[in-house]
Image (cartoon, rainbow, N blue to C red; front, side, top):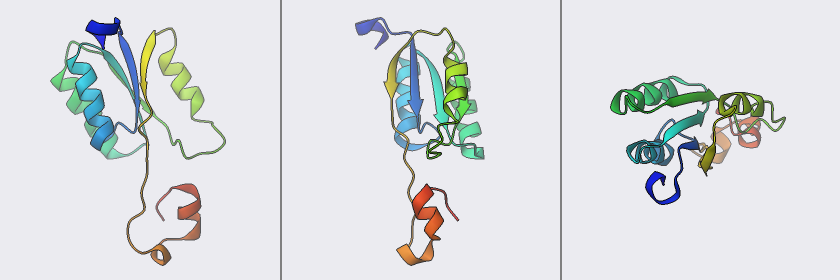
Length: 116
């Protein structure tokens, strides 16, 4: 992205694990600085520490946000993190899954994307 498009900053949602974390790792490896966005959880803290240690010359910014909050209150934290940064690449990768049988999870968990 940096070489081909001149991008310098990227934002990746759902970056605490899985595909989002690997997208962030790939972008950092291409020389971009990255804003990580995910739910507040220990896994997210560990992902940021791991990526920052692997790419010490890159900026890795962590933004805790629950994107399932329909009020959009989380947007202020993202706006603050982006600030004046020229973010040219955005990967909207956030997702949440409830495992188990449907009836084993509370109705509110199904409606909000938050485990009970």
